[in-house]
Length: 103
Image 1 (spheres, rainbow, N blue to C red):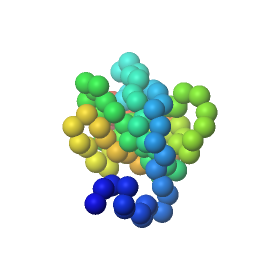
Image 2: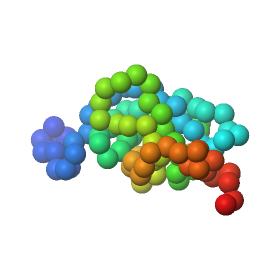
Image 3: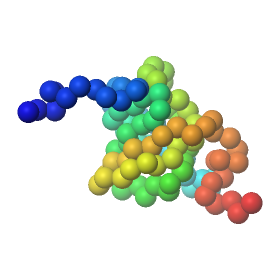
């Protein structure tokens, strides 16, 4: 049985893409570029190349199209150089300071 034999069971199917996004980990940390390998209205799968990602971060998409949106994401799984993250809200100044702020 191949992976093509399985029916999609997710409420919001994933779309395979190869799209760049900017990952922001905090105010005084330089933004990094990551590759989005798939996305849905609920979240994204990212390929990281040597980036240590905290549990919550801001992701800004380049261009338009697809269901993903700029905002704050929370890591829900990690596997090697890839992570899955769910959308938790819009990007705000307070969230852009995470994780360096202590307020």
